[in-house]
Amino acid sequence: MDMRYEKPASVAQACALLRDTKERAVVLAGGTDLLIKLRSRELSPALVVDLKGIAELAELRLGADGELRIGATVTMRKIYEDPRIIEQYPGLAEGALAVGSLQVRNRATVVGNLCNASPCMDTAPALLLLGARLRVVSHKGEREIPLEQFFLGVKKTQLAPGEICTAVIVPAAARRIRTAFDKIKRVRGHDLALVNAAAAYDPDARTLSAAVGSCGITVLSTRPIEGVTPGEGAEEIGRQLAAAALEVVRPIDDVRASAEYRRDMTALLCRRLTARLLAASSRR
Image (tube, rainbow, N blue to C red; front, side):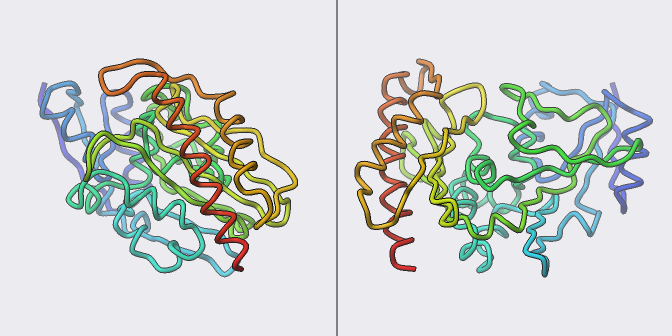
């Protein structure tokens, strides 16, 4: 089957192309996952719709109201090099920096990482804790999906044929939440996560929670630990967060690590992230 390539200049044009081709079309943003599938013939679409010609999708905007908008073609590198993201959303910046190699981060996008829906995706844990939502558009209109509802399983999401995820939205209220990210992998340098995790401390609600990847069919979040005060009992709070994470994770044995090792590393990351967050918050 011949494959057609189109590079529309607007979201409306992209939606029209997808409307006409439906299930036989794929969307290209960064392409770090898609191109591998095309070359290996795992995918043989009739149409590839390249979003990189749509200017509005390249915007990384922190509005006056405090809402953060990450367009569909914003790269990982743009995220972790932006001073505003580093200051206000450190867990997201750390997650973006943990993705692949420098070459991959120059191309890979946050939206693409989420839509690929791998259980070990590095940007999802922090965004999940920040209450992010995805803006989705098709020829039928626009809708928003909370990130916690978006993932249905391994490589499965709520996106329907003909829909484009145009942006990740982080609500203004999330600016008060402090986040951190960490990752266990097999080797130095770039590698997929054996376990990854983000933790979030809300100083207003005095709660601490975590989201863990590579330990289930998608990223899993914990119940919040309540009554948390920086500088008081960080070690015990870390143990509580680890216990909360172990209640929800469902790791498996595979060629990269055992389920037992993943459970141990989940607990380690929760304790490590708790210490980091509470120490940093106590200095504020």
